[in-house]
Length: 457
Image (cartoon, rainbow, N blue to C red; front, top):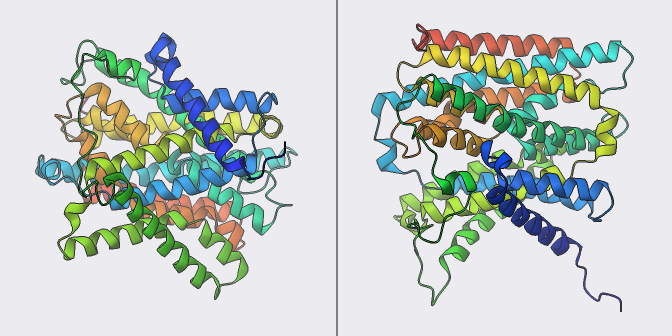
């Protein structure tokens, strides 16, 4: 009997859920995943990707890509709506500001370094006769630092501008993002273990808790609350209320972009849709500010909002890896492998080199956190910090939460520069020079703010 309703979208979402659950089971049972603390979303996403590419499971790649785009935007909106914990903010004073500022400036250094690596290697491959589009290598910082959502957004935008020039850009972007996450864990966890053996952190437990390693809470262990009700359940469930705020912000953002793109040239209008996440977080902050102004901020529970962010990120990562088309990646395997290997390795050495010099306190915890962030996302950076500081006695975790404030100018400039060859007709060489200037400014600011000093380890 023929289906009377379309099921494709729900089947894709349900498939993501099933393989995310499979990832949970495998993380709890297999020591290899536990040793490197590989999240369930990466495990499940990798298995689903294999099944899709072997045609064992048939799922629409376009639907997966659409979900990645929207989940990425929702995650940023949810972050913008999340209230800041005042008690944690005030806990470490000046040390907190120096930590977040240092992390932001490190991102200001790493973004251009990754772009320069990607750009130079791309030029070498083009000169060698490979058919690559000029901005191919700029997916390195888009994937490693910005993550799957932004890599996909830019890839789709470039394809819409010229599908013949930027062929397979979306899949290439998702691949760089996925490789970045694996660097975050397969390199980040050994980095943390090396620091523990060297005695670089005094907060590290001798043995990691079982629940942390396996990824599930045992039945006899005390459970922590995942949030508190701010609305009466007889009226509306608290989780539903928090989703209404996300939905409101999403619609406002959509309406705003829809209006302004009507008055912009076609190429720029397409690019603006790739920045949906940025406008989303701006409107989320405005809505949060309005609620605070009218004494309604108590209606947003920090923990519930964090759960919404976590939900969107988990499903985002499963969908990201599942959407990778191996047949496409095989065509670009050599340049992607070389660019990714150099990007991850050089990022590691630069982060460690700078990290040991700009912080007098908690240098290694902060270094590990920012490495996880510039190869994966803030949650992967937090996971590395939690290995070193499970009780969050150092300000490293708080620093990561505040880093975006100081990193934002560099990220925005970096986002404009990766698009410069597409929008403004810049050559890759011109763009690389601009990235070099950006890196020098970030390094100079470390001196200006007197962060640079003697190595701490």
